[in-house]
Length: 459
Ligand code: UD1
Ligand code: CA
Image 1 (cartoon, rainbow, N blue to C red):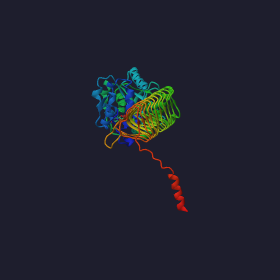
Image 2: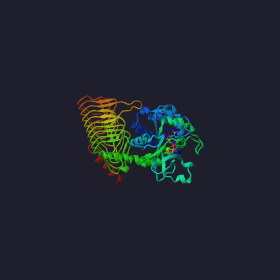
Image 3: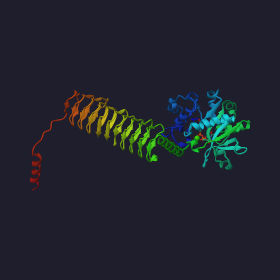
Image 4: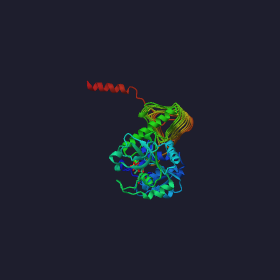
């Protein structure tokens, strides 16, 4: 169920697209569901901002059911009648509760089957059950069946004291669900069709309704408010760090790091405090990522050193490369094995060959740089003429002197030298020396004469 607006967030974005652990809440729920059943058996009920939600998760191959008007969780299932007919068991997941695990969904489903129940709900004991539906049990402790679920707004003071809450995850006998769902009504505090009322409906029809409690109540927390989302985000990121530690990654002060849920890191890599690893970033083994680096959607090989304050987006870095401090690798940067990109070097859409070095204060954009190249301090590729971008090609073994400007399109041939402070506007053949600056002239004694003239004046 992912059709709701999320009024309590006071947001222009649909609730299920808010991000936790760096990805939309709904994407987490779908990823978990896909580990239980194939995507073709998953139906996402969308409604509020349906097209945006659909687009955000379309890549997963799930089906969509549109609930054009959101008249409650019960109504969401009514709308899905056609899509779900033909399934013996229907598992309902809440699109706003992203911490649910595969094991728990399986447990819910297995318990439902074993109990031969018509409806099984996943419940949890919360210290602060405020806002959740409460589970009303009937009968002796231990084998108590569920009589009803009461929502916060309709609960009596006594019911409000019940700590067992409805998680919003259920298993239903499909055919029975659709035989009885039309008995739901909107006579309640919100004027909505509550799916939770199915417990009472089945109970009155003498069908079996049971509940299974989660061992970890944290798994079922919903994200109705920004405060709840913050709690989920922290939980998810700490769990991610724990999983990485388990895999042999060292993370110092993990609570200062922001590591998205899809990030992969190899063993013996060390992550220092205040590092952000975002999106689909993949880091090889034996790397060291130093403080204040922000790495998004990038792929790093083994033994890479990232010195403090390095920023990377959509970049690839070969094994043994050394970056930073304060390098800025923009999209399309491809740094070769053992290459160095140093402080205040900005790169964009470049290939920097094996063992090449750009250690200080440069802008390298739209460039193809070969192997064993040395880019002197302050070198700039002038890739933009105000209208179009042009390419700079620097072949293997080239030495670019400091403070050179390379006006693209231009090509520096294999093994050439470019003298410091050159402005290169024409191609340089292999093995040449290119000088693109005015010849130095020296006026001997000029300074001494100037000083003496000044002394004379002040007398
Ligand atoms: C619901 C349960 C409550 C339970 C809680 C657990 C009901 C009436 N109440 O309350 O007992 O404790 O979840 O988190 O079900 N949605 C639709 N279409 C709609 C309305 C909602 O698809 O017309 C979706 C929402 O996008 C959301 C999910 O259903 O993903 C749950 O809706 P929400 O409004 O968050 O229900 P709660 O108030 O949290
Ligand atoms: Ca909710």
